[in-house]
Image (cartoon, rainbow, N blue to C red; front, side):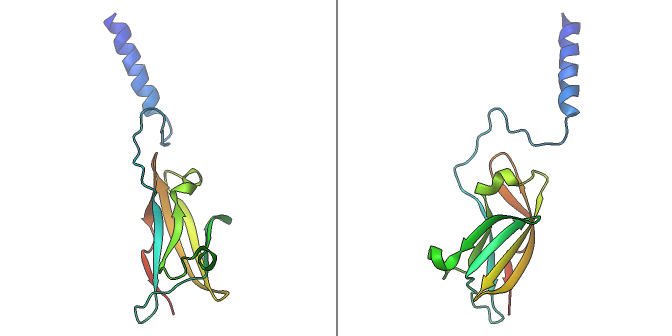
Length: 135
């Protein structure tokens, strides 16, 4: 009986350790109810906040997040959303390369690259700026 138990345990450990390094979120995962976002703060050369008219975030060449700040009523906020927990299914646990683009008065004024990863519950920025100064 001990031999059977030992063999079963050894098989289970070997089986699970040989799996790809993929995120397994099955089972009892306790997530907080917070909603996470990756933000970018924009300033001008004098340190004053820069307010974009709109922004878009791309995963490869696919648009995954966009915001029109003028229509949404958030045009006076200098913090701009790069990506949110709503896009978690598009993000890799190893990290996905994203490109943020922002426009003001119809002109592209900022581009920034990010790497964002996920766990079972939330996204998390692993690379990319928190603040940028633009002309």
